[in-house]
Amino acid sequence: MNGPTSLRLSGHVKDLGGGFVVRRMLPSLQCRAIGPFVFFDHFGPVAVTPQSQIDVRPHPHIGLATVTYLFEGAMMHRDSLGSEQLIEPGAINWMTAGRGIVHSERKPQHLAAASYTNHGIQLWAALPLSDEQMQPSFTHTPASRIPQLKVDDAQVRVLIGSAFDHRSPVKTLTETLYLDIVLQAGGGIELPVSLNETAIYTVDNDAMLGREFIPRHTLAVLDPHHVSQIENASRTDTVRLIVIGGMRLDAPRHLWWNFVASDTALIERAAQRWEDRTMGSVPGDEEFIALPERYVRRR
Image 1 (spheres, helix red, strand yellow):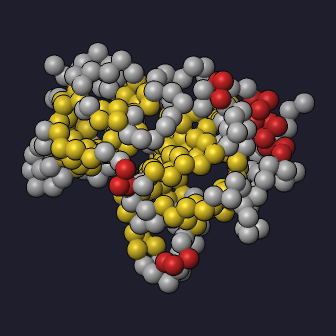
Image 2 (cartoon, rainbow, N blue to C red):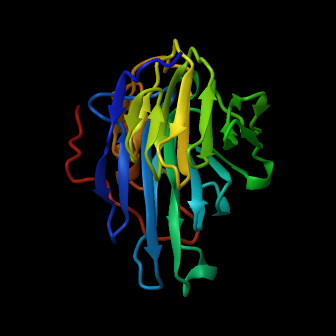
């Protein structure tokens, strides 16, 4: 039996500068989080040329974990811990900000003169209350370690969590689900019942959820009390689906700029640390993104 979606989000387009445009699905007025995920950006496909100015300069985070996943392209991650990691398609890159970390995402030097396509997803997972001020860390899980299997008419990659009797090696602090599904033309796949919050995102084509039409670029929140039968609406092309979810947040979160926290005082303190340049820096990278001007410190 297929239950209807309780909510569909179409997101909004946001230009991060230099022509780097993203479709932001979370947060939204209708939905603040799905499981631990409080932020969802779909970027690309974007053509990167030697003239492109799409580097994301050093900037801070607290209280969250960034989760970066590429379908195509490459990015170079560097952070204030000294991590330096080439991000390539299929890998999961999990950066725990905790009490504070600074990182950049730039064009890899070996591709400086190349033209290529960048396409992927970046998520933020709010850390549990007991861990939101933990020590920062960075973990890279290569594509070769991610479970890949055939289910019904789909190829499934279990990026995070457990599904279809397979478990990802990526370690998380709460129960979390993140799947990459490519559904063949005219094909279908059944997602089992989950008691956790779950949603699907149609990356590049339309899909059917039971009898409901889910357009491309839609985040559809699933009914936790029903099996979800998903079908490709196209008879000629594949459709890529992202599934996210997990255990409901243990308390409401405040989001401001790049900061996530259970208490606005933590955000104010982080903003002051960034303004004072005491949060840290990326080794060898003197550039940084300044604190937004609209920030007003509350005493």
